[in-house]
Length: 115
Image 1 (spheres, helix red, strand yellow):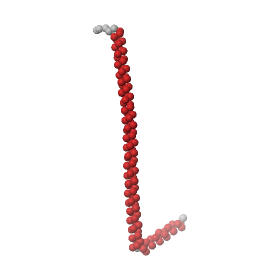
Image 2 (cartoon, rainbow, N blue to C red):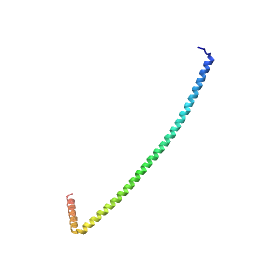
Image 3 (cartoon, rainbow, N blue to C red):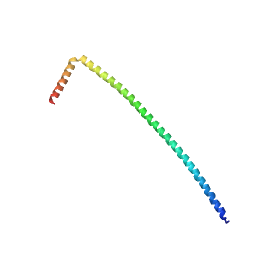
């Protein structure tokens, strides 16, 4: 085996230390770039999530409004139908209607006396 002198070994160690320093700086640069990309990605993801939630809530609100409007229309139609039926029954059986109303009034009066 050939022996190396002290200067050569010291020079080799210095060169290795220099290369390790360069590798460390390169790794630090790459990690820094990766962190920046991660922050940008997180910000974009947050914006995307915010838009998604906003769109979803807006869609849900639209569905509720449309559903409420449809229910309101249906309720108005049903109440109109009920009123027409009552009017028809009153027109066809006025005495029966009057007797039922009187009976309900009598019962309400009796219930009021007890209290």
